[in-house]
Length: 102
Image (tube, rainbow, N blue to C red; front, side):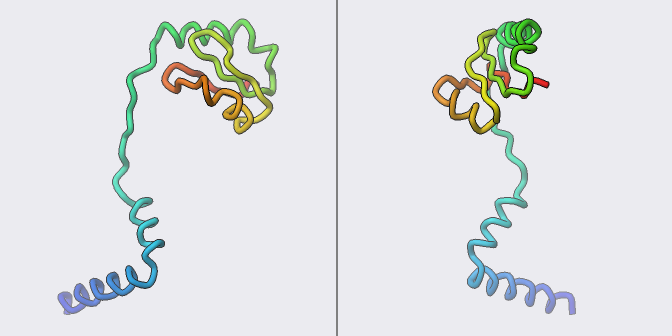
């Protein structure tokens, strides 16, 4: 009985793959084992400089999204999407703090 159910499951999966190939590819991508895509660790010195910049200047940017890289403001905007457009050519993800100043 169990063997028959396994065969039926395989046949149904194969039939579904023919009818819904895009949906099955998407499901496989969503359900696959997570992958870690790492980069080199951020520089403590550069992040410390950015934290110091935030402590000193954050009040001037309340309610804004800011990107600070190695202690230098590289962009400020009203939304994260707008900030992304502003900083796209200057962005170095591992050494950049991006946050909304509250």
